[in-house]
Amino acid sequence: MSAAPQERDALKRAAAERAVQEIESGMVVGLGSGSTAAFAVAALAQRVAAGLRVATIPTSEHTAALAYRLGLPLTGFAEHRRIDVAIDGADQVERGTLNLIKGLGGALLREKIVAAASARFIVIVDDGKLADHLGGPTPLPVEIVRFGWQVALDRLAGLGCVPRLRQDGGEPFVTDNGNLIADCRFAAIADAAALEARLAAIAGVVESGLFVGMAPTVIVGGAAGVEVIER
Image (cartoon, rainbow, N blue to C red; front, side):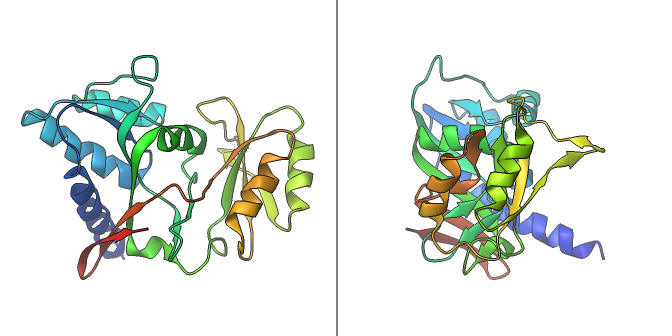
C-alpha cells in the first residue's frame, strides 16, 4: 500500500533533478510550490552547496522557509524584475498543448506571477499528471477575495462547473495573499484560453489556476525514465 506513493516520489525526484540541470551560475531562479517542486529545491540546494551561484524567488511562504533552511539565497522582485528560469510542478498537464492546471497547493497567484516573469518556465511532473484534456478528476482552483465570495461562487457555477470553497480544518482555506480558493470541477475544459478570460471577467476573482501557453518545457518522470516534452 505504501509503495505507490514512494514510487511517485521517485518519479517526481527524477524529473526535478533533470530540471535543475538546466540552471547555470549567475541565474535568478523561481522556486515553485508543492511536493514536486520541493524535490527541485532540494536538488538545487545540493548544487549550491557544491559551488553553484544563484539567487532564488520562492512562490510561497512554505517554499521560502524550505529554501532558507537548505541554504538557498533568497531575493525578490524589488531586486530582480526578471527571472531566468522558474521550475514548478503542476496538478494536470494537457498533452499536445501543455496547458496546465495548478493551484491545489493554494499558491497559484504567486506561481503565475513568477512564471510570467520568467524567461523560461519548466514544469516537472510524474506521468500520472498527464491528461488528454484538462478538468475531469482534477478541479480548477480559482483564487477569490473574501468579500462577497458567495456571489463569486454563484458566478463560477454559471460557467458550468461545480465550485466548492476550499476548507482547512473546518475553516475556509486562506492563501498567502489573504484570499480564498474556490475549487471548480469541470467535466472537461474544451477551450482553456476562453475559460481563463471568462474567469478573469468575474468580479472578485483574483486569478485562476489555468496556465495557458506558459510552459514551453514539461519534464515528465515515468517508469521508463525521464521524458522532456517541448511545445
